[in-house]
Structures are given as C-alpha cells and as structure tokens.
Length: 115
Length: 112
Image 1 (cartoon, rainbow over the protein chains, first blue to last red):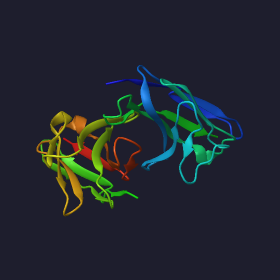
Image 2 (tube, chains in turn brown, green):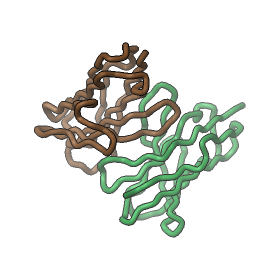
Image 3 (spheres, chains in turn brown, cyan):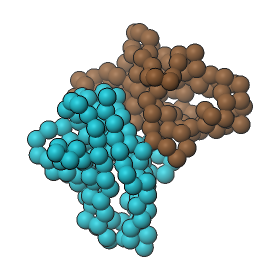
C-alpha cells in the first residue's frame, strides 16, 4: 500500500504562532483527510482536503484556524494558526487510493506541543 | 450519522491469554467496519476490515473480528496475545471508503 510521510514528526511551539504540517504520499490519492488526536482521546476528523477546491471542514473546525492546502494528488498541508495550549495534539494525515476502493491509510502523525 | 462505542478504555491481560476488545456501532445505513492499531508514538495501522460477506474477518498479527448485525457489534479477538500486542486499538466505521468515525480506543496492556 501507499506510504504517507508527515513533517515535522514533532514540534514544540510558542502560543500565538502558527505551524504548517506537510503530508506527502508516494502515489496519487483521491481523498486526503486531517485528524486530530488530543491527549488520551480518540481521533476526530478536522477536514477533508480536496484537490483543486476548498477543504470541507467538520463541525467545530474552521478554515481561519486550520487552513488546508491540496495543490495536487499527492500532497497536502495543514496549518494550525494562532496556537494555544489547547491545540497540543497529534495531527494525523490520512488518504484513500485513487480508485477509492481501499481503506484509509495513515501517516505517522505530528506531535504538537504548545507552550 | 454513525457512532462507535468502545466500552473498555483499558484491558490488562497476561501474555499467551486470549483477549476480546469490544466494539458496538450505531448507524441507520450499511457501513464498513475497521479495527486499527496504534503502537506508541506511531500512526495507525489497519488490522482488519469488514465490508460484506463472511461475518468472521481475519486480519494481521493473528487478530480476527466477528460482525454481528443484530447486536451491531464488531468485537476484536486474539486467542493468544504477546507482549508486542501492547498498543491502543481503535474501532471505526465509515460509509464507503471515506471519512472514518472512530471509537474512543481501548488500551491493551499485555504483561508477562
């Protein structure tokens, strides 16, 4: 199956700053997703990254806070803007293959700590 | 809308003992069901999936799960666990292969 690489793998950031997380897939994929995993909790979908159009955000998440780019079929970025300690989480990128007939696969995640 | 319930937040078990991790789901439409495993400081890895057909699904690392439509359950089992199975296990549902709805996870702790 395809492999997802996320950068950075971890970071410690000051409150009020922004961090951009990159997600690179080694093959073309149809859909890409960004999830958040807060400490000790499950995964919550932030948004679906659509190639050539704006991302589709889930309830409780907004573009101003989590702007997403999807310039092509293998790459996406998630920016966590104006960070606060409550944004400390693991952020995971996920994708589904181009034929849409296989399960979602995940990157290793980005562990973000906001101080 | 779909939802997933994993009743056990943590399951301690001794090595070589059998284990069952419980998962119940709620959905008004047919869904696909998945179990993912997350080892410490790593991403998620697919263990197994149920799409249709046989209700007993076999996955990697000796795990299996049984889909029970009447009880809306998809419990994960392994007849004999190893220390290396210590991890967080997530049950998830989706309509088609799109966005996943995850349960809260079950931490499996295997001790010698």
